Length: 249
Image 1 (tube, one colour):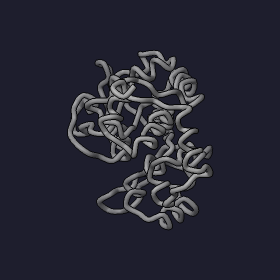
Image 2 (tube, rainbow, N blue to C red):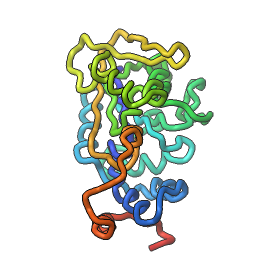
Image 3 (cartoon, rainbow, N blue to C red):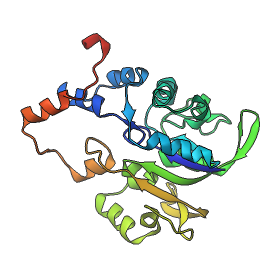
Image 4 (tube, rainbow, N blue to C red):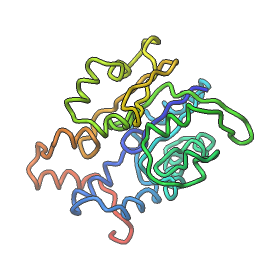
């Protein structure tokens, strides 16, 4: 069964309201972000919900590969998706493969273990037969969609410098997968033990969503720090589109 793996934050869910709140209140706070998730306050990245519905309508599956915590964030994430017009049947527990899933468990989405890379989660989905609601299913990841370069093959990108990543994108199989429409370009996996790429026998495509200049692996590599507004103009702009926790309203 074909799988499209999508990041949630700033790929499906527009988080500019909470980003603006953090910018105006001196930075990221984990507890506040957890409250924001439970509040299901994110808007849609336009087109994402229709795309998810389209994949399901064609016999595919959309799974969510996120740095949100599997232990605490599934319900809020599901509620947010449903608020944005996604039918709840497309947001079952087993489509959430977020941070902390136990990849050694027959039901990773219900068991929490610890930190893992996104690439390992996708590799686990591809690696064996899974039982979903009493039905055995075999999955193949055919597309990855995200706003962060580290959400595609983070076994490689998180352990390499920007020049090395750029070279891999330009000249190698990794780069050929971005916006790929050629069935001859096959899926790949970076083995963290051997430090080598491994080929998979099916084709895959990577879709890199641009526009998130607030956080993520690529922006850290670039060292970007500025914007085109003066400080006050920037704060005024952020205040126009803002989420605040209930205790601070």
